[in-house]
Length: 346
Image (cartoon, rainbow, N blue to C red; front, top):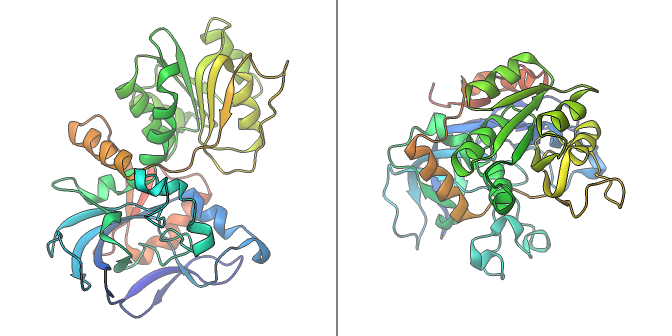
């Protein structure tokens, strides 16, 4: 089968032919219908060899959807041909947090060598994907897998971050979304669906800000040296009740803490290497800074339910599996409008 792999440190991803996997006991084989392309992949491919926590080659793709092609011994409750989405942050399934469906915060995954598909385990940018356990599959029903596969990360991650901040998102307040691309444009929609706050989107280009306005941002601000002052002006000098930084580079992290108001919630979601400075006199009184990661299985179900109501609509660009390296090039160059999705059958 065809697969897109990161094969050598510092090299571009390649389309290769690898053996089709077979499901063992308790495993599920999916025929992939759609797989998302993410900035996290680019971050991983920028790490030096000594920083890589898993061996190469690696089949990429941690956003996956497919139809059940085969099941291993002991698997029940799934029908051949059933359309499903893959819950990506795999855990042990038995620790205290996994028991709550919070496998994104599994307490034993690192010790046991459990890694997400595409981020250590073979990923979804291939014709077939082997899933370790049926609990990591969520029914898609009649949802279009191509338009909704990004919700497994680009929807689930902002949803988890926003859900944690909901007590702060009271009417009359404001929320700032830094980075209105793949995750951010979904974050804007989720804020509109879940709260009554004013949504202010920040990005480096007018094209990205136009996307933010299209999906519901009340205000847009160009990301430059004047942006913090402009956001303060838009919030009446009070700052925002919540800030979601989907970029995470040093300048955006500095902006996130600078525009947070008293008792605000600041979520640094992007993995651009920025470090927040939190201390008396620098951040607003009692502002909390956190670094959420992905989301729970129950939250993925909730995100998909929001999609069924029409509250969330991911903007996608589609590519064939042979065009996947080009999709990564365009993503790295900042040329993707929303989210890139690989369709193996195309």
